[in-house]
Length: 252
Image (cartoon, rainbow, N blue to C red; front, side):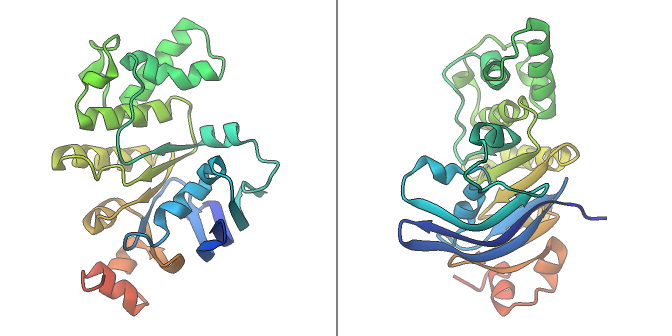
């Protein structure tokens, strides 16, 4: 049985006077991977960044409509953004390790949340690195600067850093586009493994990736949601001609 963790209801988003999202409606199913696909500039990343209110960092942006999570509109003015962003972690396109040790990168979030006990911190760090399939590669390098890790390892470190604060949702924004094929495969396998514990929403340009890892797929075009459904249906029996053309590579 599908359980919706979040629902996007009639969401519009404006950069100043520019309406970048137009009446978007879709569910986000719990413990599943949902991919947002579509050509560049179609609103995928704009939609993704609504979920953890990244747009609030810039003046002049505004939301209309709702994103509901357990009956609460997380776009409301009353929402505690620090709490929201710990529940909805984000992994960006380019790995962004902090300029500190591997251990301190992962412990950063828990320390911000006042976890001071050394044993608890060590347990959190090890658990997060294991969840991110990185523990065996870095367990003897925990005090080394994270900048010394490879690109693929850095991206898994960032995922581990996100996991250390025990989020409910992870937002992946083109998180493998800067990586080589082997690192990409590791991240994809990791995403499939992680959905036991978290709900994943991923923006990807890579059709094959969406087909391989997602349970559900949404096609965006010019700020509108063209079609949403289970991934197999979207790729094999789409309802819209535009979807068919996009997933078969005959579009854009």
